[in-house]
Image (cartoon, rainbow, N blue to C red; front, side):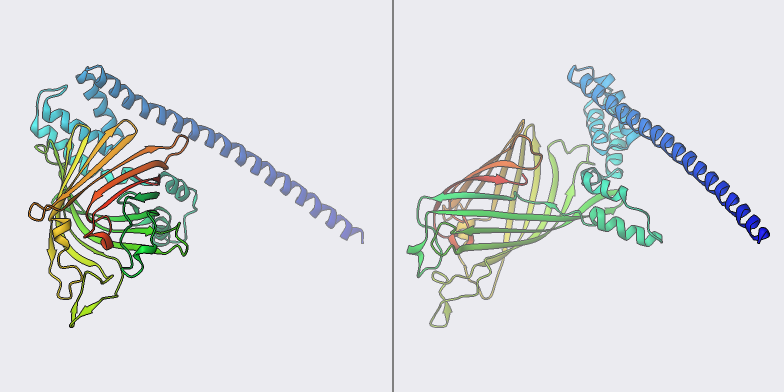
Length: 402
């Protein structure tokens, strides 16, 4: 019995010693981890300050027209942080002889670096990055890559056209059901959802962007007794964009897009007269087109001329739609501080039909992605159901993108 007591006492003593050792080790590890985190945090703060220092200093030099000093600071920043936008700026400075002697070869090098460092990567969502950084690595490399794709988004969906919700007023009763058009209201709500996904393609050191986009415009008779949707337009499209940021001579031209677009209102109700579609009383609307679009920048103006070719359709719901939509349009954006103004014009010189549209957006104070939004429209093609009726409309609301 005494022997058993001695053994029990000895084991308890050993357990107590081991526990103290483990606790001390844990405390030491905790202290070491805290010290490591402090050092890492100080390093990150210093790095961030240093990063901002070079860029802010370069911008100040540029504003004060000390271009050589600005060029040198931009150069440090671009190479150290692999900044695509700064490389692009250096390429423009080298090509135009700003700060240094004009050097076409050097400008091409900077343009190549701008492509290599991929400007699309700079637009990744910071919040998603933080979420991914907080995730623990998984059991295999492939599993971790799947986690990364899930968190960051492989296709990185983003806004395409403006996403908005507004209340609008139309001067005349709009088109809708031809039988019940007298029941429609001049006031309605209108909202648009528009997203795109991009995949970057590389060929011979140049980058191209293949995109898929989907836009849906809904006109809702919200203030009507039964609140019907007057028209819903579906606009999927595919397009290939050729950026020209790598071309030294593209002073104004910034890109070219080739694309295909389908537009329809999802209706299948057709009125027949002697076996032929009577498109004047039918509700169905649809058409397909291929298009060529260019992007120009002149100072604070972004100009996007767009021409298209309508693809013939055997069962045509609206054979005269090009008479009203024409063969192209021109969009003009004007940026002044936080205010964005967009105008869009269409015109068919043969039929004399066309349209003009203007929209404006301004950020709401205290928000990062919410804007006051206003639009006005006059002409033909307000929506597909209205394509052959002149519409005068004005609306006010909010937008989630620009």
